[in-house]
Amino acid sequence: EGGTTAAADVVTDAAAASALHDAGLHGVAYWEVMGWSNEEWRARGEREVSASLDAMPTPPAVGISPHAPYSLDAEPLLDLPDMARRRGMRIHIHLGESHSEAEWSETRTTALADLWKSEHSSSFTAMRSRGGGFSSTQFVDQLGVLGPDCHVAHGVYMRADDRRRLRARQTAVALCPRSNRVIGLDAPPVGAYLAEGNMIAVGTDSLSSSPSLDLLEDVALLFDLARSQGYEDQDLARRLLQAATLGGATAMGLATGPDRLGQLQSGAVADMCVVDVPVTSIVETIDTVARHGAGRVVETVVSGRVRYSASR
Image (cartoon, rainbow, N blue to C red; front, side, top):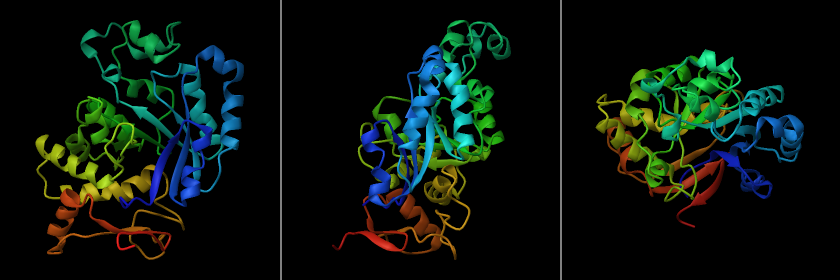
């Protein structure tokens, strides 16, 4: 109903592992891993996660989601990306969602490299408690989490160096502004992401923190946020619609190859939605879809098959 044909579904319960598969949608179902200490991980972590991954149905693709730097110790955060890459899987992580993950350079008492070599490097939380004013993005970058096969969610509390690291690693960030607003976070720096050339996608997060799964609601809010943050270029609507389509496909590794998504192009998978808005010039129509397209999807096509029609 919202026009979505592919999603990054972060799965925390085995009973929900088949949701994308059963719905016939494209995307990646990421098995989420959280709450592991170094000791527990060494004892049984890799074995248990491997069993969970083996039980995930396909299609669509399966990935691994280390939940966040503050919910895992360093060893599982170091090992999980290697597990994903050995299996040819994508990686997803919540990053820069909490103010506690921001860079606190004014209170830094030591360097990240020094802490990493010390006995206080068991986790991001432990390193932060010892005076590490570095950000969680800087931390997971040292662990090898980021890369072109990884995308992060939220990216709210990220300074210029964090955003630079994402660009350097070709890591996309999925912005979820309505969810951030509901749970009381600051707005994501979408204006800076756009101006600096970061790869962005758009996410709804989930119905636990978002009013709906209508992605165009988030696109409209991102438009207003970018303008309020000083982004004045006239390409804003086009770039946000690109983020909601090709940007999402890129974040999930689905933008290339014979089954590529997110683009209206000969040979690509026939995924599309029809939005009922007045058609004027191309530029004005794109602007209207980005700002006022929410709630106006009248048809959604997945792999050439009509899966939703408002007339039915």
